[in-house]
Image 1 (tube, rainbow, N blue to C red):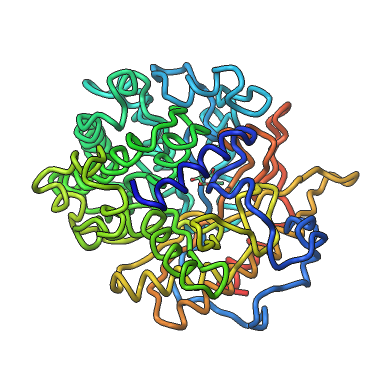
Image 2: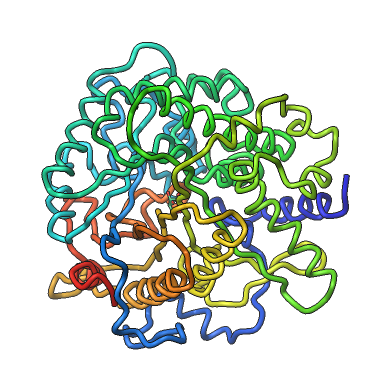
Length: 497
Ligand code: FCB
């Protein structure tokens, strides 16, 4: 076992002692370096809208004609209706119903009740002026047990949603898998079982044949890395496993599933475009030492190249393979021809950017910037510019869409009923400006989806973190446009800042 692997394992052991869900990118327990503690306490949400950390002026920035402004959600986080119309159970139903797994024992049983309120939510999107809406399809609504005959009532829901988007002039962007694996497939080994990749392609084929005539952009698997790290290394997400060896086999099978789904789309004759949705983390050395530079390189391998190289270059990064070692289940699990499948040509890359990572010489991490309410998130808009330009430089001019970027804030309606999330406005403005600069420097960025349209079930954090442009009063399910939503409407109208 390599030195860095041992250190990662040590880090994992340290993390396992932290509160559930605290470690979305493994940064819990990291030290704060280079900034005053009072700045950290700001958490991004208290800052006045005038403040900007971006070096460019924050006005007069116009995006290219046709640039699509959007917002994103995912099925388990907003739909609710967990037992309706033939929906089966997913790993997230099991996980959230297991005592101690989520904050306050929260579950997605009701969530934002979007399954019943989708028409009202579509009207909200129209009022905001959205041009694109990224949502996910719940696999257990389509195949309750993850295989076999599709459930027509499940398909009908998404057809109504997609038709409603078209009626309002909003382009649908559908993610096939946003973590809600049918529990029956988990019982058969989940993503550790190669067969799950085949089942995923079959499910994708069912969806393509039902909706392929009306969905212009498909995303295969949302953040495979989060399933690997949070689901299988730290166990803070479903299925709650802590087994690093299994985790990287899962990484391979997720990417195999991705490639098979791409092939299924082509075979179905549907005309839509398709690509992966990757959360990419720009990795920087924490200091000037040669050790930090080397550790950062390998860290980047695990965070970014493990996915980008297999999808865009048809090869896993050698440094990561060497670090895993020949006996790892992943290395043994890759069969001849698999990398041809994972690298089936895609039409676009969906990038989700939240935070940078600073790596020390011993393979640990430190914080350099203020964190948000999600303590794994350091607020660093330049990271958006860096990751976009790096992807274009290293992987060619594949069209890019940003499918997630956003900030959680402790939003509460004021006496006047309004939700004044000024910090989110600042955050988004600075990140939009960074994206604009990346476009100016040659990045083929075509759309931007804010996470999230609505406050929702934030996985292990339950309902405590609010990420929406729209406030949800969970008791009444009333929706309130936050200040950021009004501001975003103006951005969309002007097509810029
Ligand atoms: C991303 C997830 C999304 C949401 C945001 C905050 O990693 O894809 O569902 O939880 O983080």
